[in-house]
Length: 114
Image 1: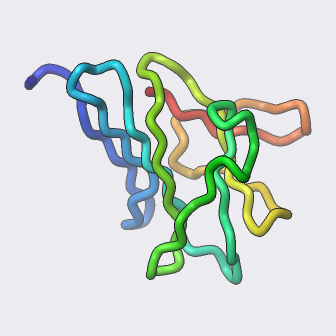
Image 2: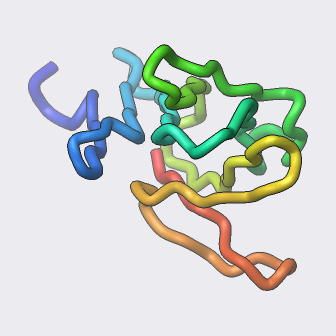
């Protein structure tokens, strides 16, 4: 199909960070989340309302360049809140998020729209 966007990728400083690949039937979207190498970080987790904010449900894979990546299939037409947990003690947002929203903890959550 030529109509519509089926693959979208955000690039920050030459680093691919958020990739959206829509299914052929248009019902779901595979979103690949990637964060740049973080000084000394050993573990990263993708947490969001699509994981009930449980870090253990979506650990990120550490890549050879030191970055971290995880992919999830999400229902199209929705907005999802997410953040990254680093080494069980530090939250960070995604610089390539579609938007940000205040959360009840006095910080912000990243938003991905699919």
